[in-house]
Amino acid sequence: MAKGEYTIGMKIEWNKVTWYSKFLALALFVALPFIGFYYGMQYGKIVGTIGQAPVPTASTATTPESADTSVAYYNNPTEWQVDANNTAGGFSIAYPIDFDTQDNNSATFSTDWRVNYSDNIPGIKYFTLTVPRAFEPQTNFADATLTVGESKNITAITECLTPDQSGGEATTTSSVIINGVEFMVFTSNTAGAGNLYKTISYRTLHADKCYAIEYTIHSNQIGNYPPSYNLQPFDESKIDSLMQNIVGTFKFQ
Image (cartoon, rainbow, N blue to C red; front, side):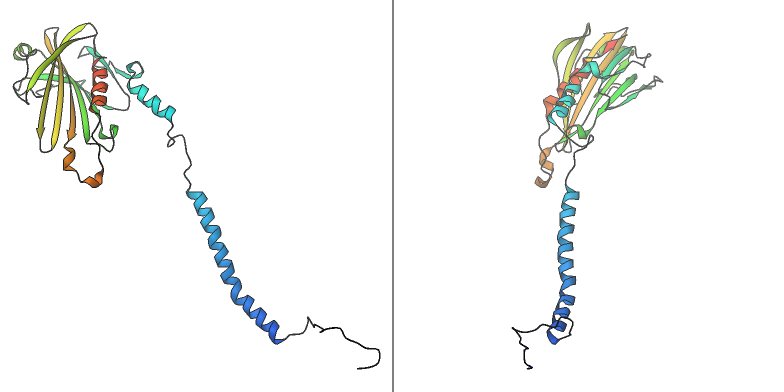
């Protein structure tokens, strides 16, 4: 070493390629893709979780207020649709607007104007309403049907206010006044092939005709379904109350 020259520690030459710099570069070259892939996957999971989170909307969100509004609607006939277009039938009736209905505006004669009436007596079924299975989901409820029919046949008039002799046992439950008109009320229950049918028939004589307002609640034997379906017994009183409210809106014009 020349005079006056001295060195402290080891001198690092950064611009010089050495064996350890080559090793470090190779290690980084191999590791960086794996590190990038790992953090990319973590970011994707976070974004996916945020994207899958349920977002309430006006059509899907359910709140106690909206549920109460729905129940209140079905219990408030003053807000329902009124069927008063069937002038040939001479009556009006109101119903929830989301139920399917059919009007017989042509006044075509048929023998099914009444339920469980097997005498093949002609009459006219003016109005039919159907409550779908979806009204009582995850239960053994199948559907409910309400009809309004009349007949001026002499036999139909004679038998109007007596229990039917077919369709199972029928009993007079009471007489009721509906908008100033007295109706006799009959109940029948039938069953077959795992199906249960409860029919309530309201009948009166008016303008020399027999009028029948009838509804049938159709359900299935819940024991016929596999336990995995997890079906619950339907609320029969709820359906009965709804149908009675519809019957209660019937008016002669």
